[in-house]
Length: 196
Image 1: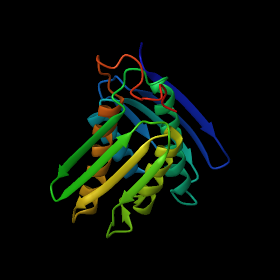
Image 2: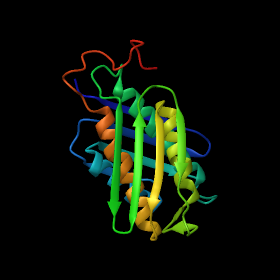
Image 3: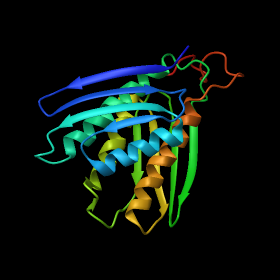
Image 4: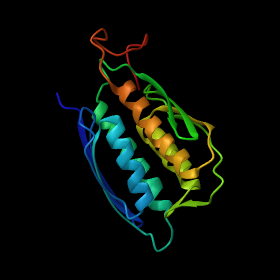
């Protein structure tokens, strides 16, 4: 069965549609209205081998907060829906990814219980049109909407663009690993018999 989900969310601040295929080829069509955020989501799609469509109309005349946070919520919901009952998945994934001066660590447990730990200190307020403080808000929203335990740490880095890109790509690789199937796992990888 194809693990795919489509989630739409409309509020007075944003109108968002996300379609994700977990077993894809890394093909993406992204339009959030924030160029650098698009670039990050394209990298997430490509390096996680997730087929991803994201269409966002947000109140960018205010700022980027609602657009970025709400996109995280909808992406997290879509990942959760696409995973289904999680039978056969590895559940855990981790990746340390280098990008020039930047080195990012991401670890994930798709346990159904949200937890988020984030350790990164950007030295720039903005990268392109994206406020760097919103990167934390995005990953927080994804982790809680998806019900995943998510740890992200920037182990080293000088260039803010490289740091952000390493973070999104390490997240992609860790999620690909955690959501991947293992033939040895016939049900769910839990002594409780469920992940949720």
